[in-house]
Amino acid sequence: MRILFLLFVLPFLSLAQTVDVPDEMVFLDTKIHIKNSAKDKIAESVMALKKNKTYFQTKLDRIDAYFPIVERVFAQEGIPDDFKFLVVQESSLVSDAVSTSNAVGFWQFKRESAMELGLRVDDLVDDRKNITASTKGAAAYFRRSNVVFDNWIYSLQSYQVGLGGTQRSVDPQYYGAKEMDIDGDTYWYVLKCIAHKLAFAEEEGKNSTPPLVLFEYANCKGKTWRDISEELQVEEGKLKEYNKWLSHHTVPDDEDYFVTVPVTYMEREAMASKIGELSKYISAEDIKPYSGKKLISPKAEEMYPGLTPVFVMHNGLQAIQAQPGDDINKLAIQAGISRNRFLRYNDLRVFEELVPKSYYYIEMKKHKSEVLFHVAKLGETLKDISQKYGVTVSAILNKNRMRRKEPLQPGRELWLKNKRPKEIPVKIIELPAPIVKKPELKKEIVTKDTAKVVSKPILTVSATPVKEISSITQMPTIYFIDTTHTVQQGQTLSSIARLYATRTDSIKAWNTIDSTGIKVLQILKVKKRVVEPLPGFMVHTVAPGETMYRISDLYKVPVQKIQEWNNKSDFTLSTGDILFIKK
Image (cartoon, rainbow, N blue to C red; front, side, top):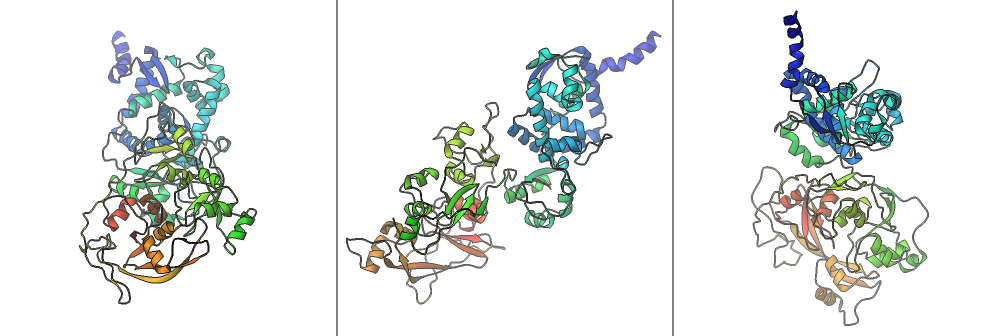
């Protein structure tokens, strides 16, 4: 009998020895002391998870693919990172998993519970099958539950038995506790989640060439699967396979949705260059026609008769679009506000020039954005980001715990809606390295017979032939035509000269201007430079105040591509410079 008893007990006694269950560890931001009575149960669960190597590896591959998304959402929502192991416990990261009680999706929500947490569940969309949306729903539940317990472990338990069931079964003395004992009487659901952390925490992220990489794509409102497939060069069938939350062929346009984009490890850099490392950071290009009352002031109608300014709603704020030749004074007058307010609303200084076709706010910017994060691009400034999202520079500094003169590192993840918690370190995302080519100087340019010969090169180009259009391989045709310019309020000879990429002395000579200077509405003769596009390229003339980043944002192409196409090794630009943008 003694031998039979030992044979029966020995396997269970050896579990804790086979699986290293620590005496204590940090779990859900709580220091837990694991008693021997709990170790065997945890070890048994770990052994069960690792028993089948193929099944274990399958889960690990999904973990490596999905965890970056789950981690981002939890960091944004202020939820302990360890909750990510619960999604593995609930569904094995299978998007359309269904339980015997009809709970569905990654986090196994029942229909009513999901809708209560703000998820959409209907015949068109089932957010329970969307990793981003469902994780936000789970975060909302954990946060709400923790208001009651101030104990994330109790919040974990409530996810399975509910708030009431947990309140009836746990010890109230541990409400608010940051240190707890875990023993054999601890609820099995909690022990199992600890086992999932022990089984997968040391293995996740170690595969340097994972078979699957997932991107979140937010710029998808109103687009069909075919649209997204063609735009991102991903098989339509693959998109549908990883986005079972949508039962229709078109993404609704009523709110922001995240499409999960699957690629192989070898394709990850190409996809990153197409949609940005964080397409999960929603674009803020929310520009709508203004439909409110007429904004133009009586003074503007008097000073600028016949001119109709373009008013829009940009990020929910009233804004006005700058036209070529516009200055700060003119836009302030057209908007009916003082110059000082216009400067303050747009973080401008009085001597700065406006960028044509850009939008400028005519009311105070917000202190937070509906957009969660932004990744700083090459050449981008805090002011650029402030204008893009309609959030004050001071608010961005505060939310990211930055000093005012602290340099903005390209690739830095900036928090726009919430303040980055102290315990979450600054995240720097590796951006694609710029492609820099050594410029090859050309001393001659082609001009039309009727044009004056230009004595210096207009553009530095490379004459090296390539198989496909990737940089300028021939010189452009450049000539000048006579035209006129009507002087606007606040314009000077210097600003007009910059506008036409010429010298003030030339304008004076063309118009016989003496020391009295110029007057508002005076018509000046000027020479406008014309550049004929090269095959496959568009022409962009750099306007006053434009930066490489703003041009990149205007054409939705990476900065490094503009550098490559124009054989530029740096970000410097001058008013009047010519850039070629590949069609």
